[in-house]
Length: 316
Image (cartoon, rainbow, N blue to C red; front, side, top):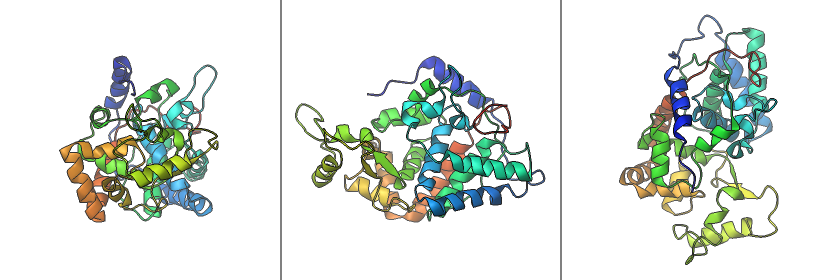
């Protein structure tokens, strides 16, 4: 079971967030009017070469926002004795940082010293969803970049092993509701999961079950073959859903079939509100899209940075 958020760490995170900057849709209207076009081009070019890029950028933004707010602290490199967020256990599988670097470089050429890495990441996550066939939305801008990044704080990310009460607590500490939790979890319609995130559900689950009884038996057998308990391939795993490069509502349909990969996905049915929303989003892609957009705007507006970084990987 994942440990609870250390109280002191939570105070640090919340104080950083509460001193956040007010955001606006027209923040760069005069100072960098082409920023959205420049970022979209970087994401589009990278996605044309590698279909896993959108899932990576969406996850990167989520993991950034949940630690110290959306301040691009996830982009900072480890330095000296300080191990940065990107090298924390939940973030080792993050990739596609080069896409943000490319976007930042192009933005700096057009309007130097104006656009934060945090805003670039928020825009890139939106573009990633849209390029995958999902909705688009106006991203509020004006985030600042943070100067602190600690691998130890990644313990505060919601884990794939979380139960519903742990998930609710994690989201509510960031001002996000159960509805936001269920909608944002739909981001799991994109991407790939390594065996380490779900194999405990299908091997020696407890004293009476070999696998988690909430898993569809045929799906459990399939996962056992992908992730054998011995002689597992180094990067073994599986796609999050059969349409893993398409942003759709398949994820919710799979939960109802008990074919969700993570414990944290399946347990959305363990609260009445969560269950109602899973049924609603499984039945209506439009309802899911609307809820997802609202939740993304709320989540990505948590900010607590201090500067505009020249290089997204190092503080000024």
